[in-house]
Image (cartoon, rainbow, N blue to C red):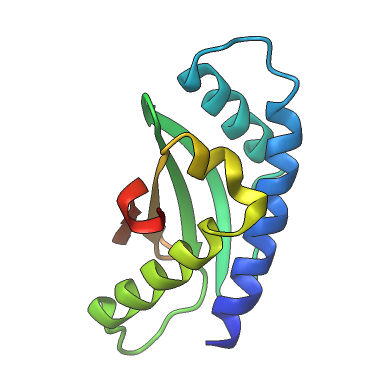
Length: 134
């Protein structure tokens, strides 16, 4: 749980930097603003979040869907992905409810968190929709 807290704190900080970049965007469409938000985050990537996790990049999948790609850098002998997904979703929802993430919540952005292992093999995804954090 310790790495969840550090990861969430750093993600909130990173999202704050991205919001500052977003405010400089001239376009009015949500998708264009979200793309600027993503570019701001990607300028800092890859970022080691903690001893287990690295943010590799983000992209706008479509309209109002932001995808965040993470690598879990440590190999674990057994990984209960069902339990891990549930815990990650709960933590992501809490993080998105933070005032620093108003751009996401005010615009009903869906955030997809994709996790890969150190060999770039897909592990699992967690999706947080507007209904989850409203």
